[in-house]
Length: 456
Image (cartoon, helix red, strand yellow):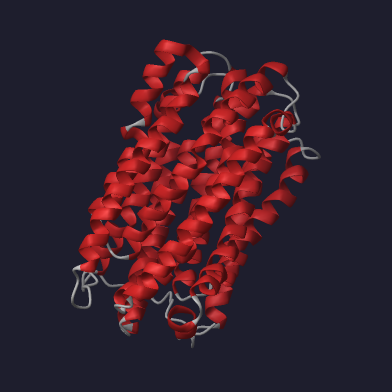
């Protein structure tokens, strides 16, 4: 593990460089989604819609941990890669320390607050007497106790990837996912812990994954700019501002996603727990296609950022074009497979006729949005890699909350439960159109650039 990775960033053929970075990232994203699906799968084998519903309803607060990790991880990754692009290793080192310790502090505070406000927040999430106990235990183990390792696992993966070491980063994330899949059936069935067992499995797997990253960085402490020493924690040089502003669109997307999913859950749960269980399973499955697109965008972010800062415009454009082609092609294949295999896939999770009916209906509609999501995610990543703040923020607001919630309410009014899922592809298609317009305008701006861009 060496800080100097110029061959990958500057000289390696673009297609090979992109594949080198995205394949490990995509694999780790897939494994992460699989272990999230594993929770639902193993809980579903109990054939208890209430427990499956609980696992769905409590997801929005848990997803916020990923938002915190992305706030500091993606923001830090962008600044580190751009700092390395102009040879400023000291700033890169300070950026890493700020990201790590800030992420740990915020996740700890969030975990404590979330547990204390359960009686207030749970009813707003659609959690009732049938699911309250399951959700309470899930919050305790995954957010309050497991918040820091969950956040640092993802955050450290982003930072390690910024140095060009996608394989090491992806191994750590994948390790947590694989361990979770192993722990789930042990804790859920023999110990008869149900949802609580799934929560403990998630916590334990993230603790081990975080330990891997700490050991990796300690072992390579002489060769990496990613340090834990608090003496390097810095709020100056624009580090805090740059990391927070660049990472904020991803955090905002997660926040709006939580708000959007909460509204969706509240609407769907009004029909039945079978409806919310079916919808939850469908969204977990659809996350697989999204994870692949997300893995591609996160994988190439350091490559785009490095060449942007180094003013290697031709190479940067080639990276972007290649990444777009790969991402959209994979998304189209994912859409076809999910649409065709909707019924057997949902049945694999739960043997309940009403839940399966809702699930296959939701899945066939929301999978249509995969290509649009891949395009928007790539454009957001381009903006973040080049230090843009306003454009990705606009797209984040539009993708989740700004467009889908009004369409959810409208479709629920005119078509009931069958119409609700149509809000997702409609909103994502509009967001993609706006993203393309913003990218075209930004491309013209880049063509007019005549000097090395500023980092801030």
